[in-house]
Length: 190
Image (tube, rainbow, N blue to C red; front, side, top):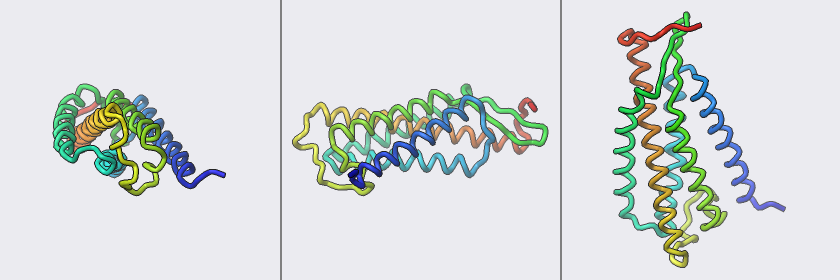
């Protein structure tokens, strides 16, 4: 019989896969820009990254790394905000609905980093790291320094990807506002 933890891991993998594939598909084909879904998906991405980053501190990663995580988030968010103009394209339909596509690389970076962090957690910490409550039971003290370093590097990569996504979404919302106010003109497509 499967344990509740195993079932929750499978459910989390299925939900995350559906969200990731849906977002990648929309990034390639384009999607209707709306403020609330952008905020919602950003909060979801933030929640996933925070879960892994915070759990790292409870399993033995030195708390000083929070400074590194915050710095990486701020820098990557700033860089992405300025880069996103080159990777996003917008258009309007005759009824005035605004669509956008682009930012594929940014989404791939985040998804790959979360998958890597998930694999490292499952392989080296065990399934107790996915009980959706933070436990101090899975300590890294007895683990290899290589595992600790891998968790730190993947967390930094994940926070970098999160910053890229937040910067992309900030730019997306800014351009959406400009287009909807008529301050930026975009091509009209059917």
